[in-house]
Amino acid sequence: MNKVYPSAAAALEGLRDGMTLLVGGFGLSGNPENLISAVHALGVRGLTLVSNNAGVDDLGLGVLLKARQVARMIGSYVGENKEFERQFLSGELDVELCPQGTLAERLRAAGAGIPAFFTATGVGTLRAEGRETRAFEGREYLMERALGGDFGLVKAWRGDAHGNLVFRKTARNFNPLVARAARVTVAEVEELVPAGALDPDEVHLPGIYVQRVVLGVGHQKWIEQRTTRPRPAAQEP
Image (cartoon, rainbow, N blue to C red):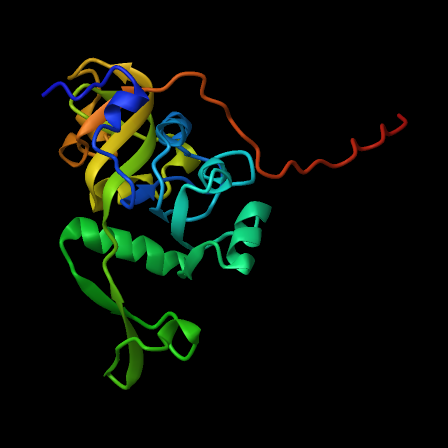
């Protein structure tokens, strides 16, 4: 039951060109940065990348885009990456934009073994072109397919040798959905604890959804957009 691998590169054994890679994170929060760096170092290409967003130019998934390792991107928000914009407008990158809630539900459906579902989101828009629609109780709904992948890369705060995971605050975003939807899920954890050390009531994702665990190193708390305001002037007594 020990699922711990000695390095991020070892935990990605079997990753090949052309595979579909699901990656957790929201902006730069909850990005499995060690695993992303390992994918970059492996040099695999032609990847289909599924993630809420594409990171920024030199951080997060932007590293893979800059290295031309991604052939297709499925995501819901891509506004912070100029290299993504350039590749998309030049035709180098195939892009499918998916409403954020729909993307989350497509991942959840894959993890639950549900092949498709109907949603009102996207009806009457470009999203609905060429897709099946159906009326329920007088309202039209759009059919969306579940979205699984070959590998899922997730980031957790704590994890044990059995793959049980605890996420911290905003990092508990798309990571649990990605973990459930992938055939092989690799979890990068900030703190690795022995099996049995986690309180079962505190576990956010059971180890049954995780096949491999790696202890990350050098984690950084990136800030995507730093917003500041002037310090209020001191008031006279």
